[in-house]
Amino acid sequence: MPDMRSLLRVRSESPDVPIDLDAIDPKSTPGLPGRKVTGKDPKLWARAEVERIGAELATQQEMLFAQAAVDDGQGRSVLLVLQAMDCGGKDGAVKRVAGAMNPLGMHIKAFGPPTAQERRGGFLWRIRKALPPGGYVGVFNRSHYEDVLIVRVNGLAPESVWRPRYEKINDFEREVVDGGTTVVKVMLHISREEQRERLMQRLIDPAKHWKFNPSDLDSRARWDDYHAAYAEALARCDSDAAPWYVLPADRKWYRDWALSHLLRQTFADLKLSYPQPDYDLAAQRRRLEADG
Ligand code: AMP
Ligand code: MG
Image 1 (cartoon, rainbow, N blue to C red):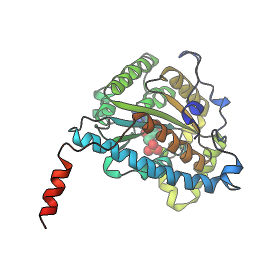
Image 2 (image 1 turned 90 degrees about the vertical axis):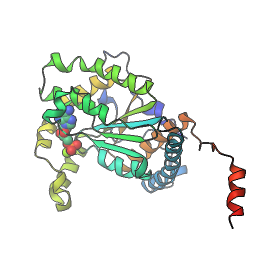
Image 3 (image 1 turned 180 degrees about the horizontal axis):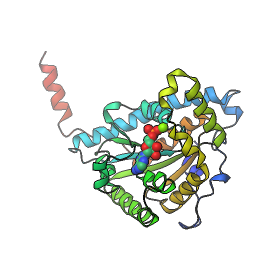
Image 4 (image 1 turned 30 degrees about the horizontal axis):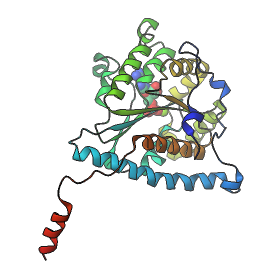
């Protein structure tokens, strides 16, 4: 099994040195086995693997849920933070990968521009409220990172406001991890060309018109500024406790395959199992058998 975590983990010399995103090819497929394993159609192979791993993820998630259920919600939780440029594939990844798990145990939240009320509580207020409870797998489709991305690029707040947020984010994530949540942060990394293709599809296909927002073109025009903001956030907020991964995402089938593996590895670390009954199993069976 490929070690996706070491393959995709951002490598920063220091928090002060931004991650070189240009050095990561969005079309690349790190960890993907060769044709000997995949056969001649890696895409078909990867899709089948996503299904297979999805079933494993579902079992792991059920164990997580079961553990919390017997411990009165005191169990651990997992939080996947997804960030990407527009059309980066966040929705697709949620559908294909998170969709393999039981909706009953999922805590999925998408973050748009904060309302006036949300803003009042500070940028982490709405994030805290959305954290997955014990036993749940949470997914953030966008996150508190927008507060050092779009906010920075569009000048929604002055630097004196957004710059101190890196430290605040690190403190916050440390607290979340210490509270029993495993945090996995993934940037889906697409190329400018692929984004153009996908935006164009949204303008061509009537079933996709609703996904297009004219402001997406304004963001696209600031591609380099966004990448600079990502590069700095990834370097400053990567830690062993709450690691950042950059996942090449031009190929959707690779994206889903790699993300499935990342989650699988994350679950494996938790060494989950179904909880032992806190009642006398044999006695209860005898009781039921006698009730013929
Ligand atoms: P979408 O994910 O396509 O539904 O778009 C959501 C929009 O909300 C994106 O343009 C985000 O940049 C924006 N957004 C999310 N969080 C924030 C935030 N904290 N401040 C400003 N805009 C945000
Ligand atoms: Mg959008």
